[in-house]
Amino acid sequence: MSSAVRPAAEPGQDPLDNPPPAVNYRPISTHLAIAPPVSVVIPAMNEAENLPYVFKTLPDWIHEVVLVDGNSTDDTVAVARELWPDVKVVRQLGKGKGDALITGFEACTGDIIVMVDADGSADGHEIVSYVSALVSGADFAKGSRFANGGATDDMTPIRKLGNHVLCSVVNAKFGARYTDLCYGYNAFWRHCLDKIELDCTGFEVETLMNIRVVKAGLKVQEIPSHEYLRIHGVSNLSAVRDGLRVLKVILTERSNRRGQPRRARGVPFRTRQGEAS
Ligand SMILES: Nc1nc2c(ncn2[C@@H]2O[C@H](COP(=O)(O)OP(=O)(O)OP(=O)(O)O)[C@@H](O)[C@H]2O)c(=O)[nH]1
Ligand SMILES: [Mg+2]
Image 1 (cartoon, rainbow, N blue to C red):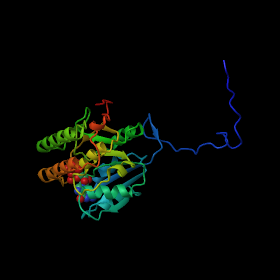
Image 2: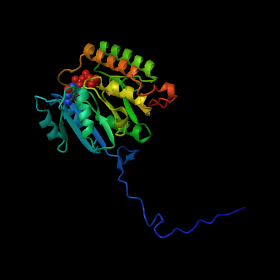
Image 3: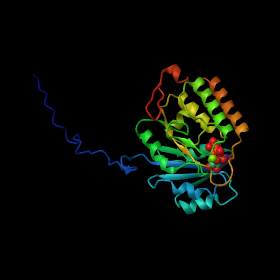
Image 4: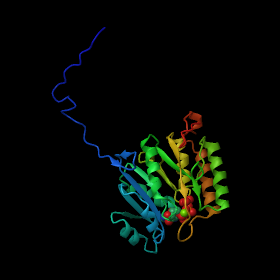
C-alpha cells in the first residue's frame, strides 16, 4: 500500500493564511439564502393607482427596483418614489414595452434581473421561485400561466387562443417545450443579455426573449405563475396588432440563422417539474 504525505504548505499558500473573501448571503426563504444581488425591473406607463399593490408584494431582500417610466401623465413616478424611496427611475427615450425593458435592463446593477408588470397582475411573492430556479442552475426562469400550478385571471379567450397557437408554433419551429409564450413575468442571469441581444420595441419582447434563449442554448426552466387581474386601467395591448407583431418576430427569427434550434443540437429543455425532452 502506498501512502502519500501531503507536502507542507508554503507560507502564503495555506488557505487559512488567505481565506476567501466573506460572501454576504441573504435569506430569501426559510430554506434558501443567496449571494447574488437581484434587480427588479418594472415597466410602467400610467400605473400610479396600481403601484401600491405591486410594491406591497416585493420582498425586502431585493437589491434594487428599476422603474422604467413610459412618459406617464399621471403620478406614476411620484408614487413609486413614495412607496420605495430607493427606487431607480429611468425614463425611456423610445416607445413601447420592449423599449422600456431594454432601457431598464441596461440600468440594472444586479446579477439577477426580474421583470415585473406594474398593473398589479404579478405577485412579487413569486420572485423567490424564479430566483430559486436560477441559483439552482437555470439561466432563464420563464413564468408560465399554463404550467401545472399556474393560472390567469386576466386573459380573454381570444388572447388565450392566440397565445396557445403562437406558443405551439414556437415549440414546433424552435424545438422548445413551452406552455406559455407572451407572459411578462420572467427572471434571468444578467449574462443572458449578451447572448440574446434584444432589439425590439413592443409587446413582442417576451416572445423574442423566449425564442433567443432557446436559440442560444441557455438552460430554461418554466415557473408556474398566477396572473391576476389588472387592478386599475386597461391593457395597452391589442390582441390583433400585437399578435401580428409576435408572429412577425417568430417568422423573422426562424429565417435568421444566427442560432441553431435547440432540438437540432440535442440540448434538453427542462420544466419546473424537471421534465426533460
Ligand atoms: N414604460 C413603459 N411601460 C409600458 C409600455 N407599454 C406597456 N407598459 C407596461 O407594461 C406592463 C404590461 O402592459 P399591459 O398594458 O398591462 O399589457 P398586458 O396586457 O399585461 O400585456 P403583457 O405585457 O403581454 O402581459 C404594464 O406595467 C404597463 O404599464 C410602454 O410603452 N412603456
Ligand atoms: Mg397587464
